[in-house]
Length: 418
Image 1 (cartoon, rainbow, N blue to C red):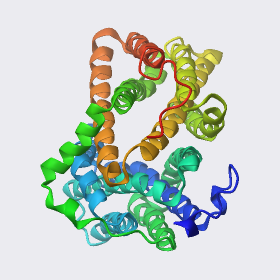
Image 2: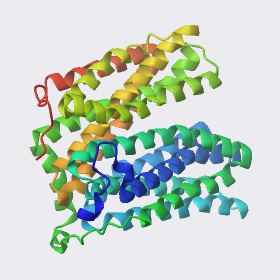
Image 3: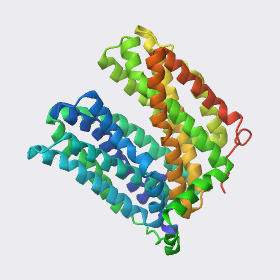
Image 4: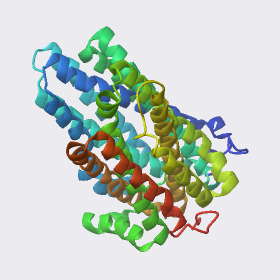
């Protein structure tokens, strides 16, 4: 693909490459719409349909459920077809599902069941899109620039999450939740438009790969991870991170309100401020990997994450809330920086014909830890209290911080390329 890498002449030059720039802008626009929808859809349920807390929680579960149900077959699909048309299709399906909400409201037929279906459909498109775009990045970017590419994509994703949630709240207040959903659709349409501007032509997948059964192809991705010591370690490492971070997120709001005594408006500001750590981590990942090596960067980021996690349960009212902000900010920065390096490694390390399945298998294993972390956090909080539960979460982060010093990457400067 000599025509697709003209903009990679120096570090930081990827945004001068038209194809990558289109992917980056499109992914950012789609994430902005997705983040806004994550706020507006529950508001539709509450403000328009009078849903209770259980229904709102079930709505969130409906959007997350596809990660467990279809991650593995999505990887097979991604490895069988051209990825760019698949991503465009995901954007259009998500847009169509969301625009049905204000239409149903206008005709007086909107229901909670409708919202559950929409949340599930959008969740399905998200799983397929993320799997496809992560397998598509190595097609546009050379191996030497994968860390930079993922840093830019993760940075914009984190920024979109923060901005999109705020935008969703403002749109819902100004326009009303159902109409705000229609505006969110624009993010998905902008993503589809940007993706159609990519000029690089993908080759048709080998039709021989389609002769294998679905179970066999899914198994190939799982076995590739299970048999490789680096991928196996990094999957376990990431799963521990997701378990601990999902537990932290599940407890943080109720802890800040009930134990620390913050007003809801202050809680929103503190949580949003700590979330900016993800942007910082994504921006710092490339520089850290260049200076210390990919394995060295993972060890340092993990080691820094552990002690700052301890600041969260130490949080008190007044000036003491700074402890939470600094702790959560640093933990988020460390986790995102490590994610950038791990995803780039997987893209460069895995055979292209297996990348979709390996990525999907990793996502299935890693995201599968999220509901487990949330369940454990709730159980501990109910029996021991929020602050004690957060001390247990901090303990898991300490284990996470020490893992790279005892695993397969303990003495390496860089992760292997092949």
